[in-house]
Structure formats: structure tokens, C-alpha cells
Length: 92
Image (cartoon, rainbow, N blue to C red; front, top):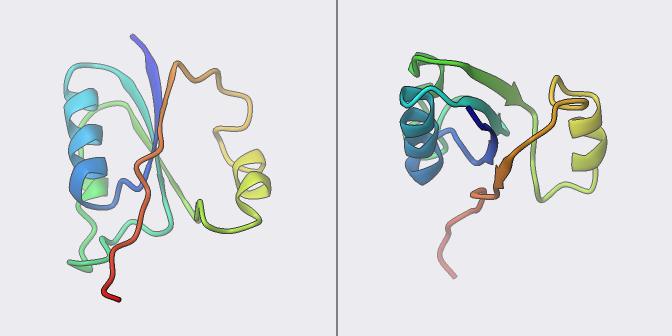
């Protein structure tokens, strides 16, 4: 099965992608700033069943994201598909 790395997995589309891919048997690396969803404040990600590795402290808007990824369990893992789902919402 393919190996996926998905950013922005603590809620919304990212969380749903993790659930869907893990449910079908894929290996998923869920990259998040923190496990608790930004809107709900709850950690739904840790409840996902399947082959999911959660990597906290990954902020794609940070200049240090490369160093954070290099120091993570993902550093030497071949990835078949990267889904860059991370984003922010706000008014203005």
C-alpha cells in the first residue's frame, strides 16, 4: 500500500483524509502543529484507527519546517504521495 504524508490533519479535510486512507489500509504520516484541532480544541486525530503516525510540531508556514521534518520520524521514509492540506482561515 502507498505511504502518504498529509499536512494539516488535526481537523477538517486533513483529518478526513487520514481517516479514509488509514481505513483502506494505507500508511499515513499525519503532520500537524498540534493534535488538537484549531477550531474544536479536541484531539480527534489520535482516535483514528490504522497505520497512522502523528508528527506534531510541523508548521508549514515556519522557516524552520525543513529542520523540523529532518528531525522527525519521516526523515528517511520514502513517501508515495504528499498532500499539502495545511492552511489557515481568518477574517480580514
